Amino acid sequence: MQVSFEQRGRADAPMILFIHGGGMDSTVWESSMDFFQSYHCVTVDLPEHGKSASCKPFSIAESAGCIAEFIKTNASFGRAHLVGHSLGGVVLIELLRSSPELIDHAVVCSGNLRPSFLYTVGSNKLFCKFVSAVNRKRYQKDYVNPEMLQRVYREMRQYSILANKPSDS
Figure 1 (cartoon, rainbow, N blue to C red):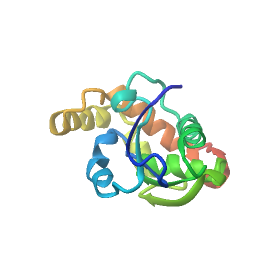
Figure 2: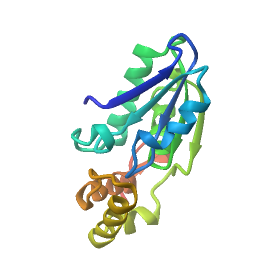
Figure 3: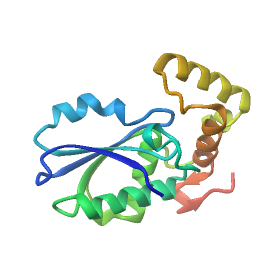
């Protein structure tokens, strides 16, 4: 799976890789990339998001694998600092589980370790239609649609790092 990465800063500096939340894309990290100019800053558009909207279906494990390969190939020190928010935090937690040797430091904001009731609500078709409409109008994210949100929320609902595999709930 080929996802989109954007890079800024010094390629020979330590890498900071930013992973966005569900329904968003790498543009949410613009000011962070501006602030950390002395680092090799990287953002990713996860599958079905932003410039990776045509990469389907979204998968936490596949996303973590793509990011791991990117770090192996592009991090000048063979490791990176990672920041993940919400869905990106869960992808980061999977990276910590599957490829800890690639991570120097990790900051996880609102990433769940186990399925949340919110993801059950979130995978409701009517709820996804509402969130999609709000997201498209407020943030002009044309790739966000009810079907995409349902796939992402289903994946989140089934994922549990505590069980080391997708959960049965």
